[in-house]
Amino acid sequence: MKLNKFLFLYLFAAVFMLSCDKDDDGPEVVPPRDRGEQELTDQAALDEYLDTHFYNYEEFENAPEGFDYRIEIDTINADNAGKTPLSESPLLETKKFNYEGVEYTYYVLKVREGASEQPQPKFSDSTYVSYEGSLLNRETFDSSQSPVWFDLTQTIPGFGQAMTEFRGASSFEVLPDNSVEWSNDYGIGAMFLPSGLGYFSSFEGNIPSYSPLVFTFNLYRVNEADHDRDGIPSWMEDLDENKRLTNDDTDGDNAPNYLDRDDDGDFIPTLEEISDEEGNIIFPYPDVDGDGTPDYLDPNN
Image 1 (cartoon, one colour):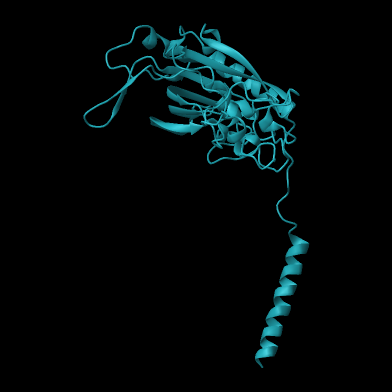
Image 2: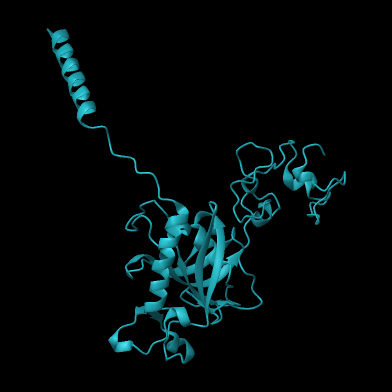
């Protein structure tokens, strides 16, 4: 009796599944748009945005008491028709970055570069920033008024590229309540990115697919990254100099060099191949056989 019951349930389930297969082939898979064509669409949208929006440049030129030194972007309308649009700001710079075979154009508003004695971050470094991200309709999708650390290798491509244009603060002070007060010379800027340097065809949270993005930010501090702690800064492991680290894998073990402590796969740690007997790093990196390939990338040496 029980066997008949289970057999009936099995047959019912099989018929149901076959019926579903006939009536429902699953969600239609839509291939991503052509990156080059989407770039043209995004540029038109960004150009219009830059022509029709302005930032609070007057507050930066004559800072009122209590000014928080944050960029605020607004739409030009009848009430503020005399404002200078972003597209005409002398502080707006046009940048290029080749990504996924497309030459992308993005824009950086460099309100303040940052303290001159501080290093500019490389595309692989860590940055301490406060920020706000928005769509072209000015809808905010993410923000943090308190600074947070960003590993630039884990951000969208355009964010990491634009951040290299700025510098951090020259100093800071820890106050009695353990809050931090930064010297007023940190980097202040905004970036305007096509979707191809953002999330492109992906739908991320409340960011629709193919959305150009706007970020305003303050940069307070930079730390040079060595992700695998092999003694070589991560940016120097970009062997083809395309500002991307995931495709540099000397020994072909599927671990890119910036995450591989033995870059050439010769079972001698990279750190050991670039250090002297006291553990001090030798630079330029040793090339014992003089073939132009440093030892840490040469499995035959």
